[in-house]
Length: 288
Ligand SMILES: [Zn+2]
Image (cartoon, rainbow, N blue to C red; front, side, top):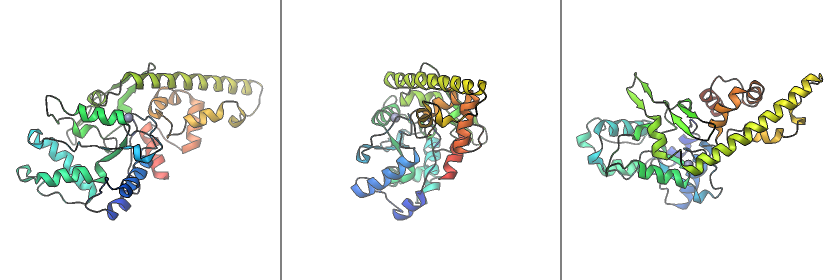
């Protein structure tokens, strides 16, 4: 999972200031084009490649739209709504006095607000819709699953060579906002078998490619040649894997690229100076 940034969102929100009706074909296509640009053509949650047919990409609601508000803890609802209302410039009345919240307005805002959207695959969309509902209706986890959140850091997801992922919980004492990365993994089923298998296949393929290429580079160095990566067989395959738009980039970065100095240098050449995955993502976003 990568940290995501909004792109061209001002344009969209000024064009559709109050209601972005994603059930209209034209509006939906516009929204999806923008959302997939933001998520690098991948599911914003699991980093699997999305269907090229934009009509088949899910517009997932970050804060679920089907919520029984009477069962939601008021603090969580307030936090979540504040988050989207601040960014969207639309009006939600009485946020601070939840007893006076106009529920239809809130529901409408969750449904038709660009800032509540993320592009996702079918499986994550379905998992999340089911996962938020615990014992009928529970909503306690909603502020934590938002790759666009400024306090979301992909470094808190720890990738394993076998394709599994574990989460570190992080507490920001400033805002008292608890990020439950473990629960995030559970809710989205990020350790589902098909995904774990794909990640572990990817890990093994890219790891052996990197090994092969660095051996080749060592050979060049031993013979006293300057390294011209582009002349090394297999480089174009590596170049594709070094692209942030490639599948499972977060895992590859943490498990492979950041541990191999010459491969890391290639990433620096491609994108510029960074110290962490979050740094790199900020950099890429600033270059857009
Ligand atoms: Zn997904």
